[in-house]
Length: 426
Image (cartoon, rainbow, N blue to C red; front, top):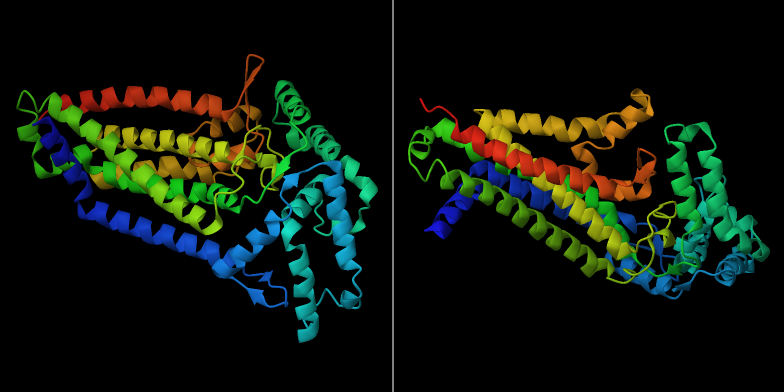
């Protein structure tokens, strides 16, 4: 009997026209996002003959070239990259090629592509070198051309020195003294040398994580918005709230069905989307530190790519559970599903679109960084210097947000139960 009630509540959630349409739109949106990732990301890849290629063929080519450079990023490793780059540049067949302008000859274009092909394998390391040797607020993708093998010894010290320079500037005025010390200690205590490995599967998954989790949050809003309000709209609240079990167990089953459906939609979608990404790009590189890629070079989290993705997904899951719980609470209060969706949309979207420079002051900066939208942006939190200083002790978002919103969830569910149960039927 209990299982039948649960199945009935799940059926009511998933069989609504709005739910079916939202799930179809979600599938199309995420499918097109993966397709564009495959096609567009590798549009500039060239083969050995200098022909531009894209798609799966390009991904496999780049993967094979990058894996040739897997290894420990020592001073000698960086020196070898700098030396290899100089040797490619000094090849006589590339001499005299104009590398600027819009009117390159077909031969020059093909030669440039051939030169690019030879560098594709160490492009990730070249990006790290650019991050390391460029001064703050200055980016030169060709800085490797001006370096010598002797400069390789500054690779890791540059990371710490650039951070200190950044923290000494006005740009870091929102950070407290304790937060700055925390960041410097984190940079100095990073385990080096780093281990580099081809990790495009993990990096693409992390880059797409915010897109996937944001899309899921809106679908969950649509699924949960009618869970109680539909009873008001159809008049079935009269039946449900005038029976002994309906007024107690019936509401509990609704709440449980809401959390279960949220969990199913979240984890099934995550497994499918990231499963496709890993099938295309591969699982290699999960045990590499996130600082071994340009995306995570400045991060103060000492974790691997696989740990980063797990943290992002778990934080996103807590965020979606909070949104689901808030949706059920609002649904118990608001008589229409549309009003619930609008309110939730504002709660999710508005904070993420506010330019923090419009709200000056470290206090308001901290407030914005603790709003629900932050849990949907887990990868951005790993890349930025978002910290909380409470009484001289510094915490990260991954220490604060799950606990804070776990408490909110535990409060919202009883409030939703009580609100619907006390509703006066007409």
